[in-house]
Every structure is written in C-alpha cells, then in structure tokens.
Length: 117
Image (cartoon, rainbow, N blue to C red; front, side, top):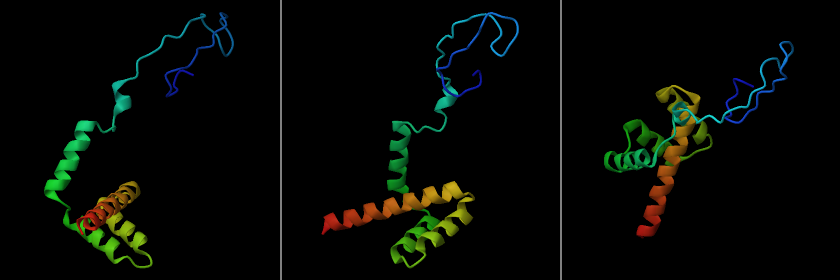
C-alpha cells in the first residue's frame, strides 16, 4: 500500500506489465519517519514550562468557575461543567479535556490540603 500511514509495507510486484501488481520487481527501502508525524507531541521542556506557568499564574476566571462547580457538585455537575466549558472553548474535545484537567487540579488541591493538616 503506497499511501498507508505505517512505515513498514511491501510493494508486491510480479515483473509483468499487466495486472494489479504490475511493474518492476523492487525491494522497499526503510524510510525515516517524517518530522510532521511528531506534530502535537509535547516535549519534556514544554510540559515543564506549562506546569510552572500554571503554578505562577493560577487559574483563569472561567476555570475557577468550573472548579467551583466541581466543588459544589450536584446531580448533573459533570454535564453542566461540560456545557459551560464547551461554550467557552468551542469544541467537544477541548471541553472534555478541560473538565478532566480542572478535576485533576481539584484533586491535587485536596491532596495538598490533606497533607497540610
């Protein structure tokens, strides 16, 4: 398959001019992965920088509101948080990711408070 995403594939050739596997018999070379395949992967440095920025700057107002919703809870808190985050961030994926992120922040705060006592 010429257009597959995987790097390992074989070109089946039969040496004939006709047919599905027509063409010269060739051996496939191993190709290096393209730099574009790394797009979106966070490096250690980037993760560290974001973590430090979060510690220094803190939460934005809408994130604080989400944190408050998590703390107050309620029957359909997850759904309300999702709807609020989706309205602010614009997409389903981003809203789910932000909800999980703020839940993690909440759990870290609770753990810090528990160890502080």
